[in-house]
Length: 271
Picture (cartoon, rainbow, N blue to C red):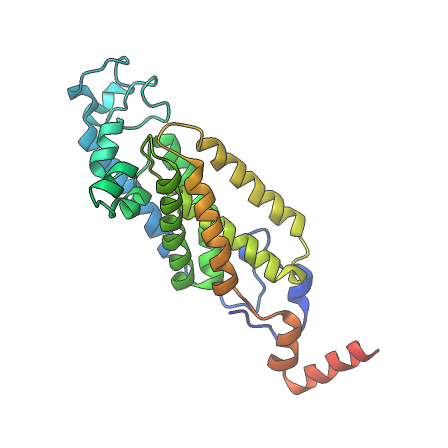
């Protein structure tokens, strides 16, 4: 996926980090136009609007207190005591396809393993996930293309939902966090594969840790679970080793540079 500029030789090894957005992409690398990740964001936002429309808080009994932001009318949020993430009720999420172990196992509603990926428990949940997805996913898609990133995103979301369904039996779960953690896992495996290319490894690891910690914190709130995060991360981590392999710059210098440049690099290595 990465092409080295013949005039720059091994400059990519000194800069690195283009895949993560911690610095400019190497000048010779092919940059893809990111459209799939923004499409995922638009889809999640649209689904959340549908959630709030179906929820229609003012028309429901309110045992936990009045609706939040009542000026939004039927799009207002459930009471904070009921949903601190500013979102719909549990029954609305369940109706629209939230992950629920009993219905998957005993009522053959396996489709919930897919629909739960597009639902969010509240506005805070949605904003954190979508900002993280844009921050991570756009750069990955530019570096590796929409096919591979789309596969990692969707399979990681599914893998996170499967692990959540196996281990979480007493509550419902929603969110794209499993898919997001899949991208994080893929970034870790790609960083391991191409460790020698990157000069700013500490910045890459710190950024990954910050995003992971924030999303694990969100996992402590209702209808969001860290089992999906763990399952998505492991799925993406394994897929990253299969799909995000890039040739090392040493290999590319031997095979992709013109003969004159190859002689120059051979002499530099020899002496």
